[in-house]
Picture 1: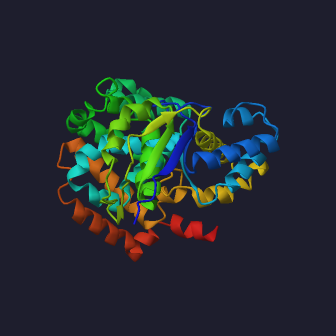
Picture 2: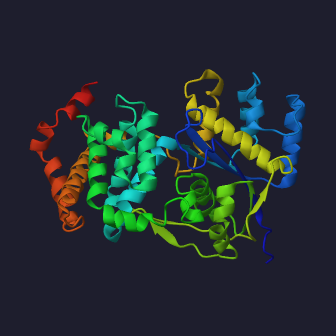
Picture 3: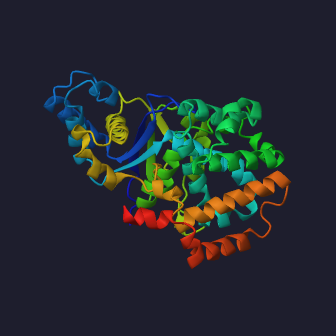
Amino acid sequence: MTTPPARLISCDEAGFTGPRMLDDDQPVFAYTAIDLTAEEAAAIVAATRQKYRVQAPELKAQGLRRRDNWSEIALDLAGQLEGRALIMVCDKRLNLGGKAFEYLFEPVLQAKNSLFYRHNLHRFVMHGLHAALYKTGERPHQVAEELQAFMRSFNPEDAPKLFAVSQAPDESSVVLNCVLRFARGYAGIIAAEAQALQPGQSLTGKWTLDLTTTALFSLTLQGFGLRYPQIELLCDDSKPLKDMAHIFDTWIGRSDRPDITDGRRATPIGMNLAGPMRFGSSLEHPTIQIADVLSGASADFTKRKGAPEFAAFGPWLDRHLHPNHLLPDAEVIDTSQLEPRVNLAVLRELARRADLGADPLAGMDDFYAATIRRFRSPAARVRNPGRRERRRR
């Protein structure tokens, strides 16, 4: 039996600002991978340009946005990619909260990290920090910029507003307070790991807050790489991807499918790259043009949910959105529910141990189990009237 040719997977983004995740005009990042041959893409692009009388030499979301029929063009193009596109959409400030957990908590908890991932502590911290950015008297960007600066330098002097905000009584500020106490208490452990993550230390460290590489890993290793025996990867010119290309190249000629776990379930990852990932311009590659348009439309829909002109794009995006997408979910920090309530108690306990310089992991299995039993008891439900109040609404 002859081996089928490698499938061409082409990728491009919208909303790239490098590690600066806080730009006002680019709050959403979208990255699209499409499964089209160069010939198929060229035919689609040519037909689209003719149908909508696009005079520009290529299809680009940035230019098409100036047209009154931008959403119509995007939806038409998307309809021709049914089942042949995967899209990562990420709220950048929510991702910043996720990076805070990864850089501040992971070095301390790594010996038993599956326990915390299994109970979704990482998602609770991420969403709690995200909420704190919007519930303070300060500009969200000012607080978020300090958090980003603190994550880069691990110098508390870079984040004076954070420590003031963390004293507010609402639960998201309590989360922020616990995160800062945890970081101070275990600064030595965190700093040792952080040396490899600070910009200037390595190419990997330089792009630690960028989403491009993370998105491409998801779209390939947990996407098209699992669908086909072999793929060829073509990406729009991207400095962070070029700096990280050596990591992707380790998947050249591989057919294994190792499992990874989030603490709850194991899922396979893998891709068999036909050769090193290639880079090109959208002007020369119609497949990249289509990925660019779909990324732009996905970012616009996410930023402007409820806008009537993009209403029809939502169902298509839902069908092609990668499971690893990163968008706010209020239920993750709704402490009227059991899991968020337990995670708030666990976070308080970790902060308490950090204040004392105590072992962060000793007996945490038992602490989780005891806290779950306590909050499941009838007495705990009586003490948490917010749960019943929400049901009345």
